[in-house]
Image (tube, rainbow, N blue to C red):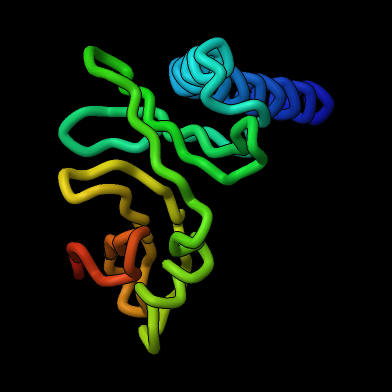
Length: 158
């Protein structure tokens, strides 16, 4: 009887792990497909010759931010909307970096965990979205302008 309980427990554990993996892979598939489609569009339009990073950024309209180097070897970000709209781009040479944006956003804040730092396009131009959890377990978003490093917007203590 004890062996059957061990077998059933082991089988249920294996089944649970397998289902979690399937859910994670299936849940990430739309994001992965959107990112790959955006990378293909950017490469086919000869906007970037080398892609370093791509991720989804959402404001009023979702867009994939593709960061890489253009034909001249300069760092550039291309914003590819997931729906209707035109691709836009911003040169990143001389702009605020992700590391600088984190430093500017966090300052002397007591941060428990940095969730992400993403570049996105807003009405005033490219901004870095720094999302983090503070020591009080509050979710915070601070947006830093990629042009000049000034705080563009902040959403605190959620």
